[in-house]
Every structure is written in structure tokens, then in C-alpha cells.
Image (cartoon, rainbow, N blue to C red; front, top):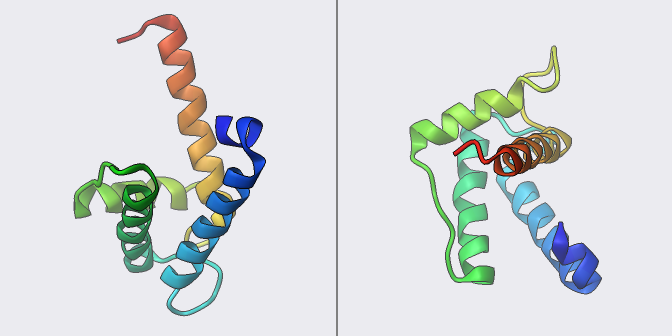
Length: 106
């Protein structure tokens, strides 16, 4: 993330905010987000992004469910999305988008 390279203080603030939103969304405090908790997280995270950047795209409930299934598939045998799964999924998305943009696939 460029924010880390350009402004470590900002990056650390954003990381702390993300972790607070994640923890607040984990209603049963098991460290994993089930589908309902994940949807709450997506709403809260969108609100956080709007507050910090002035805007943020928010998917539909069905799209959030699709994203939940994708993130949930990253750790076999575990039902729920961990913060590690979410970060891994975001890195996969960034990598794919970077490759697509470099190949001018769209």
C-alpha cells in the first residue's frame, strides 16, 4: 500500500481503524466473521472509507455474500473469515488487478 510508504503514521491509523471495525463486527468474538457479521463489517468499513476519503463504493447484500464465500474459501476446513483471510484476499485482488492493468486486458 502506498500509504505505508508515503506516510507510516497514516497507515498505522488506518490499520488501527480497520481492526476496530473488524472487532466491532465480530459479534460472538470468536475472531472469525460469519456471513451476517461479514455483511455488518462491509457496511461499517464502507462508512469508515467514506469518512476518511469522502467516498466509497458499497456492494449489494448479494455481492457481500459472494465476497464472503470467496474470502471464506481461503482457509480450508474453517467456517468464517479471519482477518488474515481478508488481507490475503485483498492481496490476491490487488495482484490480479495489477496484472490485468499491465496487460491492458480491459
